Figure 1 (cartoon, rainbow, N blue to C red):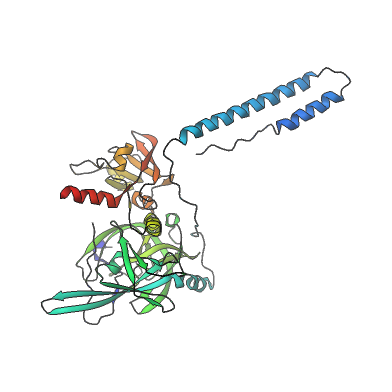
Figure 2 (figure 1 turned 30 degrees about the horizontal axis):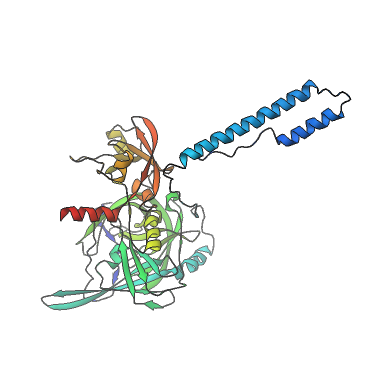
Length: 441
């Protein structure tokens, strides 16, 4: 399939004479210690009873050995506890790791008879239609184009997740709920500089229905899913069903006019129909959890659609919900996603991971960045983030996307055939851009 022929499931144009212009911007804790010799106090009591019950006042050699064993056991346990505390005391003075909550994972669930309708009715209230107006001015006068897409409510007070290309360039944004309620006072909070994701806020909203987010790192090909969206900008909350056809797909997506394009990686491929206007809507597993953001579809093939993995945007979601700003975690390296072919051509010892490398003249480690400060080196191979392996369904970028600026993660690094753990405190993408702009001026 020629990825250059792919187009985004662009917001459907409801204006009969003109399409809306779009201008997307690319750019092991210690184990619990148990006394395997049972309760020492209980053993002492038992020994005392036996000794007292004897006619002789002298303890037997058996009782003496038992007492010694108990005392030795107590000493060993005390030593182990002291050692454990010592390790803890050392570690607590180090930078603590940022660990993610267990959350929920319904990716092992399957649809049963009637369950698609049940899941759809559960999720649909949290899915909205997004209507935008874009005004343009030319020598021939001014024009207003209206377009439509889809979004998901992620908080009861009105934060909405959608695709960047749905709202890019819009002068006004409206959100229409499943029950027809319309909100016109909607603001764009920000967007992901590296992905087709945007965050909106409905002013003065409360008690809105929300969607439940799942875990896209555990997806498997063949898993059943449904897609929900504002098909063609006219048919609100249309439900289509299918399976996950693959994960870790890379593609070049263009808008409907072909005037702009962007590279998308780690995409979920599905045969659930994703039509025009579905952009920004949820891809949902059989447990009713959102595992992807419907984003693009193929124009020269049937049954090929793509969604952004939901886990890759969770870090930014947390930042938006807590601080009302869109900021992405930043590590500061250039790398190649390792594939079997790349591993063979570069004679790498692993077939999956992130190879810190640049084929340009500049270093792959950005000077002064988080990776540089942590000691990441050129030609290092990063194989996991906080124990989660980098693989076909989760690249380094996607795994780091679950964290926020300021979070500390442990990278598993392969260097000179030896594996080591390196802690990295992630930086702020916004701050890096601000510094770059300042230096240019």
